[in-house]
Length: 622
Image (cartoon, rainbow, N blue to C red; front, top):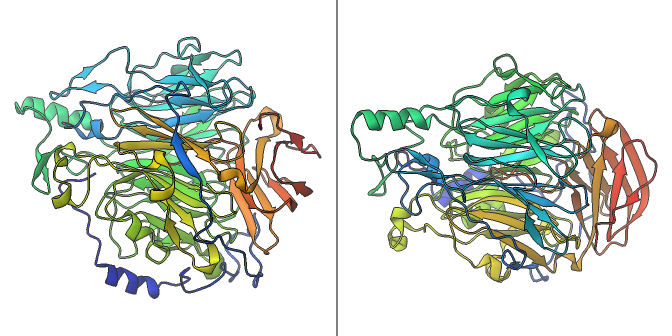
C-alpha cells in the first residue's frame, strides 16, 4: 500500500531462472520433501516417508465447486463503513474490515462477527453514525442468519479492522477480540447469549494511537493459558495532526502512477506489535519488550500462530506492508527471535520487500510441515513459501510462487484475505484470495494501469504432485466469483453444515458476500471439533493428522487468527476424495498429548474430547 515506492519484481524470465536454482524447489521434484539431517528440535508431527507411492492427483478437468453469493437470502445484509467511498484521503480508510467465525451460542453451527469502521472525513475528523458498528450475526441453521448485536450486548462503535475469537478463560464459550484504530475491545462470552466488554479489566486495550489491524491467539509459553499477539500498523494520527498544522486540505499528498493519492505507509511512523501473556485469572500482562527480542516498528497486517519447525510450540508469521515479514520463532517458553531472513520468508525470492497483507499456514504439498503464504500489492505477486526444513536440517523455506503458477495468476491483482483450503475436498489445499485495489482514483484508467479498483476474487485449484501447479478456476467457479467489488477481509467456514467450505468476504464501503460452496461435497470429507483439557474449547495449535493410502499425511492445524483481519471456522475439515474410511486419525494436543483412532468412516463430523477414547458424532452436520 505504498504509492511512493512501487513494487519492483524482476522479469518473469529472471524470476523463473532464480527459481530453478532454488534448493528443494517443488517443480524439480515429483514428491514430498524427504527427511534430511535431524532438525535442532525433534519433530512433534510426522515426517513423510522417503519414497511414498505416487499420490492420485486431481485431474485438471475434474468438476470444481461453484460459488453463489447467498448473503441477501441468508439475511446477512451488512455494509462496510470505512472512510469515504472511492477516493480515500487517508491510508486508514483504505484497509476495510474482516470478520470472526465462532459458535457463540454453543448450538453447533458457526456465527459471524463483522468488524466495521466508520467515517473519516478529508480533514481527518472521525464521524460516527449508528449504522457503523461491529455486528454479530447468529446462524440459525440452513444458511439463515439473524442480526443479534443488540440482544447480545455488543456495543462497539469504533474504527475497527479485524479480530479473532478464543476461549481465553477456558470456560467452554468462545470470546473475541476486536482490533481498532484507537483502543481495542475484548468481549467476554457470558454463556447466556450475551457478551461483556472486559477490555479495561483484562489489560489488553493497547494505547490510543495504536492502529491495531489483526491478532492471533494461542498458548505460546506452554503454561496452558491462552496468549494474544496484536499487529499494529502506523501512527496515522501524527500525520493527520501534521496536515492540520500545515493547513493542508487532506492527506492526499503522494502520487501513484501519476494519480494523486493518500500518503502511506512510507512517510508514516511504523508501530510495534504487542504480545500479551494470559495470567489465568482473566487478565493479561504485556511482554512485548522482553519476549519479542528483534522487533522493529513496522507496518503489520495479517498474522498466524503456527508450528513451522515441528518442535511442539507455536511460532508467529506476520505480513508487513512494504517491509520484510516477521517469522517469530518460539524458544518453547514464549521468547521469540525473528528468523524471517534466515528462513527465507522475509522477502520474495529476488530479495524484494513486498507489500504483505494477508497470511495463512497449511501443508500445501502434504509433506508433514506447515507452509506459508502471504498476499501482496498489485504489479507484484502473492507468495507461497514451501517449508524445506526436513530437507535442509535447519529452518528453511523456498519461494515456489513462480513454479506453481501463483506468481503469474496474481500479478495484476491486489490481494487481501487468503485461505489454503480444500474447496473441492480432493485432499489437496486450494488457494482462495480476496482482491480489490486501494486507489479509487484509477477508476476509468484500467487499461493504462493494468489493474482495477473493483476486482473479482480468485480461486486456484491445487493439481497435486503430478504437476505441482495451481489452476485458475475463477471463470468457472460460479456466479459469486464473477462479482467485482473492492474485496478485503475473508474467512472460511462450513456455514450450512453440509461438509464443504463456504466463504465470507467483506467489501470496502459495500455489501459483504457469503459464497455458498455448491458441489464441494461430491467428494468425501471428515470434520473435527476439538475440546481440550480443563474445558478449553478449540485449542489453538492442536493438530489432526490423517494417514492416507498414498503414504502421505494430511495435516490440519487449529488457528485463531489468519487470512486478512479475520478468523476462520475452528472445526478442522479434511477432503478425503473417494475414500470411504481413513485408516488412522491422530490428534496432537497442545503440550504433546496424543490420541489415535482407527478406521474412521468419512462423510462424518466428530467431536473429540481430550482424553476420551471415542469419537462423538457432531449433530450439527446436515
